[in-house]
Length: 454
Image (cartoon, rainbow, N blue to C red; front, side, top):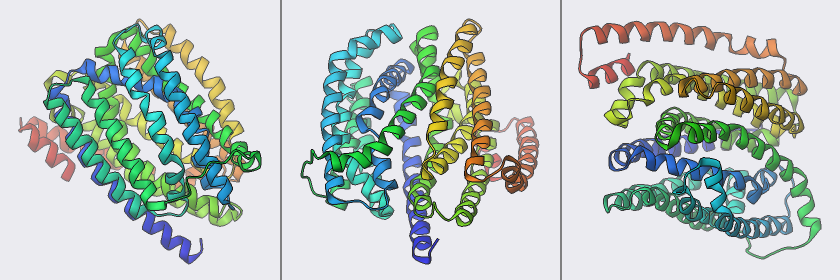
């Protein structure tokens, strides 16, 4: 990287982490309060609605954000084209969601999810306004302004409106109001940061280069969404909304902190690597630096969550969520692998390698579906273990695909061997300390705090 790009990248990482840590802390507090005010079925219904909405979100965006960041030379006409498509597609999918919401009952066998989906569908139109501005902010590495916008919108949307609505007795609707409020505020803030032209463009010349790349990204994201949603669909259909609520909150505990950490890196990594994609040696050097940094952060965190899963569930969610403890133990390592794979995917995408990843998903989805259907009567824990095994297999396949950018499997392992050995040592030491503290019949808070400090 040039010195200026290096400084911008490091500055971007700093502010991205500030936003991540602040939002993660607030999210934990928000979840702890809402878990005590609402029922597991409320979270299950919103999880079902989220699956339906994510189904359309990738086509509503058509990969415009990624295309804006990836493209080296961007014209005003192309910015207008991206804004136009985002607004019109957002409006279209909001209308389609309202009309087709009853079909969600066919998927989940639950009538209560229909009005949930209809209200959540407004997010398509709201997010359409901010998509172009958000991509331009990331393209220009203005992460300080973005961090402030994310933090303020979260405070008002979730902590004030969301929790306030729950206290007023709005139940499941308070979860949706929190999300929509945050989206509206973030749209306003992002546009105030970048202030791009709001003119509309219907010129195919402006659309073509964006859609050429963006449509492939959109298709890939859609297939990945289907792959991730299979677990939610099957658990909701065969085990009910309460078990899905347990699974959803276990995912929150495992995925939320890790996703914040990785998203902080990926938001800066993608535009930065895109700028040096033609310099192979610098590209590989920066790639391995990011991977090692991610492992150093993620693996110790995953070990802590695995060992303290009981204490974390009881402290954050409360006694009525005890069924989530075993799910957390399984999902924490699945989440770690999944997000490391996400970094590999971003790296490949910055080099415009998308087709192979689409093929992986085309095979992954039906095979996983067949296996889950075969084992559906054994139980939710078995399904979760199956999902973890499939994450391992997909991660290995991604490592093989790295050969296309001249990063071999053995080269990858060689660059992370120190982190692997260190992780094994950390796991052994912390497990011994935790078992010793537990043998003293210590208070739950003492166990939690002392284990983390150790």
